[in-house]
Image 1 (cartoon, helix red, strand yellow):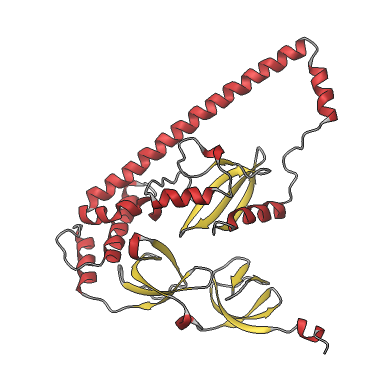
Image 2 (cartoon, rainbow, N blue to C red):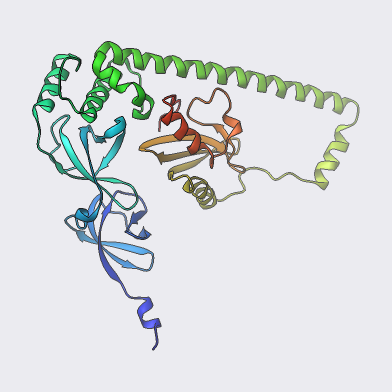
Length: 339
């Protein structure tokens, strides 16, 4: 039998498309030939390529793991105060703090499935939020609703104080915020701002020391020039030339960064070249987006985008997600660069 006639055979799959250049099927990631609007689409799949043919209704959700929690903006807040992005939300937004059911897609993404039946707890939490009261004293409030209430308080305070926060930074304190109300939310945000400012002072001091070393090296080079030694240095350099930055094509940068992140479960979102042979890398990990700056050749971290007490250069892009995971799980994460 000649199997070659089957190699070009196309199949039809209904898949959730979230934007970008790829879409995930049950067993593999496919390249999208022509990007379309986010949503459920019927794709014609041939090899590793997927071409969107027409919008479609969701398929296969019933066989996927169900995840329940309460909605906060475009996130589902579930057990453990974890606030994950909720994809493909309906055109009509669910009520604030509504109980929501989602499905875990094959790549780990949470897809909106529907709004669950409400109890008196959701209505009581909404009234408390509207009236500026904390949740203390309100009984029978599920932990996911308490956490969603706390995040909503932090969100309101964040806009008023102009202090950004990522849910993972406040996860360990969000239940205390729900119980303590607006003052506790403001205290949490001000603590984050103080830690970021301390981080910036550390970075400034480190850059000042590096500049001082650079100036000292310039003085040393001047002395060598005066004594006629610089010519020897140039000759040695000619025999053993150092590779200059910028030798990688953008595709190579993307592939190497994607490979470095993939082992930890992080997903590369964007990257761009910076001066000084550096890369700015944006990636999604544990329901958050992070932005880090790394050396373009070695992928050694220059600025992790989170507070590492000045130890950024001790990690690489490959090991950085595990450091972030530990910071989240021990409630010490402080984001210094927001993606």
